[in-house]
Amino acid sequence: GGTANKLTSAKGNELLARFSPDGKQIAFSGNYNGNIDVYVMPSLGGLPKRTTHHGMTDRLIDWYPDGNNLLFASSRESGKQRFNQFYKVSMSGGLPEKLPLPYGEFGVISPDGNKIALAAEHSGFDVIYLFDLESGDNEILDLSFEAIESVTWSNNGKLLAFVGQNPRESDVYTYNFETKEVINHTKDIFSDSDPSWSNDDKCIYFVSDRGNILDTINLEKNFSIWQHDFSQKDISNFV
Image 1 (cartoon, rainbow, N blue to C red):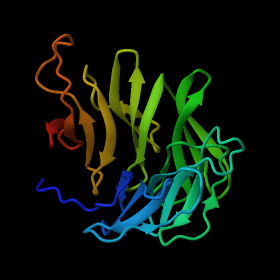
Image 2 (image 1 turned 30 degrees about the horizontal axis):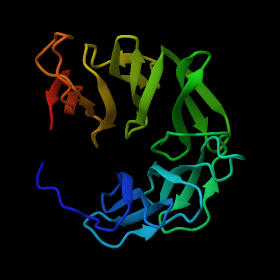
Image 3 (image 1 turned 135 degrees about the vertical axis):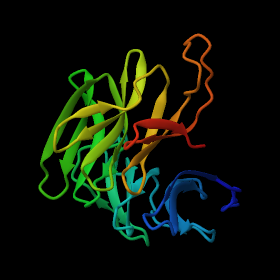
C-alpha cells in the first residue's frame, strides 16, 4: 500500500486500466475526443499515446503476455454494431488484427499467447470456451454453473481461476487442466469477484465483502481485497 498518485489530468473519461507485464506501461480506454479508444502511457506518468483510431468504441481487455500487443473488443466490423469482436493491436499502434472468433466481450489470453478463454452461455448455463488462435479449434469446459465471470489463467498456464455463481453464492474456483479438477476455494455466504494470480501462482487475490459476520441478514457490504494462500489454505485480508 501507499499514497495514490494522479497520473492523468486531461478532460474526458478513462477506464479499464491495465499494467503491462513488466509494469512499465499502462494501457486503458479513454474518451478524449468524443470517442472511446485505446491509449498507452508510462506507469510513472506521461503523455498518453493513442493506439486505436476508429469511430466505434474500442474497449481494452488486457495485454498480451509478450508485453508488446493489446487485446481489445470493438463492434467496428460486426454489421449493425450489435455485438463486439476481439482485436489484437501493437502497443505502438497500427492496423488491428481481428481474431478468428465470431464474437467476444471479455476474455483472457493464455500465457503462451496461443489460446483465449472466455465465459459464455451454452444450453442454458455458462461455460468456458477455450479457443486456439493458431488452429481455430475450440474446447468447451462445461462446469455446471448458472454464471461464470472473471476467467483468468495462472502464470504457468496449468490452472484457470474464475468466479462461479449459483443461486445462493458466488465463489472463487480453479480448474486444473491436467486433472480436470474443479475446486471451490471460498465456499461461504460472501460475494467474491475479480480473482487475480500472484506472480508465483501461490496466491489468488480477489474482491469480497467477507468479514467476521456469518449472518446473512446483518451482512455488511464492505468490499475489500483478500488473499487466498494455496500452501496454507488460508484467506486473509490484503487491503
